[in-house]
Length: 353
Image (cartoon, rainbow, N blue to C red; front, side, top):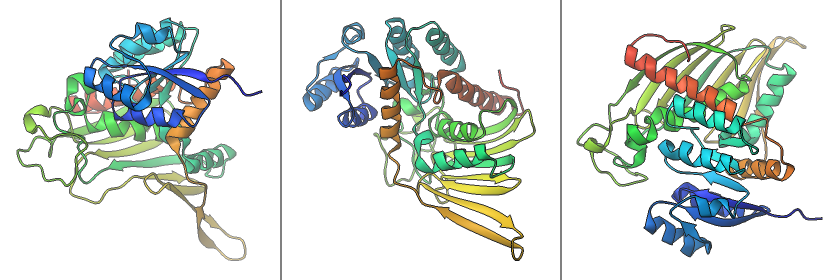
């Protein structure tokens, strides 16, 4: 028998909400409504998807089994905790929250709820990452001792004057927008080791300029007065078992874009290129003659957001919390982000809290 469609409501009706709504049409799900404080956003969403929209959350909770929270970061807690208290399962777009304290409160609400909370780290669902993680679990890499994690744009500030560039609303800039993906992807491949020390620097070298040269911008450019976050960050992260992570994140730089994650293991290594969705393995052997090999791993194309939504809906149907993209893992990522910002402010290494 075909399972009953999951009824889903979306809170925060911007661009990512439309993306999720489109994905839901390809799954066993019914989009039953949306919530946004902006009347124009509500009207546009209703016109496109033919569902009721509301200014407040309560009417949606009466109609939905599951809630997607796609608001600006500051408002994740408000809507997620209310949805969890009402018995709904919740998918929160990354990051879990705008601050560590807010993330902890969401986790506490999820621990007391009948439903579950999943965090939208979509890159976990890339096919090459499935392969990489499986090889790591099977011991092919030996011990992964160091990861170089890069999420760098040449010009990619997402709209000076949008909520993305407001520290009060977003919680930070390039680090909490892009770096959250890089940290989560790295920690998940390493199976979430204990982090003991973080040393970091953040910079605002481009967004604060009167003249910011760019070719494309996601939102409007309201100028430097509407920019009070970092546009780049560099960090060095140490684990309890002396593994290390070097992290480079930027919205804007004078260098080529890079989305490479380099994994260095004692028996083998790998490079995952997130933009190209490609994986290459680097190994050495003595069979026949001593030799080095580079192996290109070919997979089916990854639709990571679709796979993420599919996994979430499957767990809703099963009434079972997922073991990946958990709220606890979201808090672990948020702890590292918090440490990066504290280290940058203090100009020395700090521990995680």
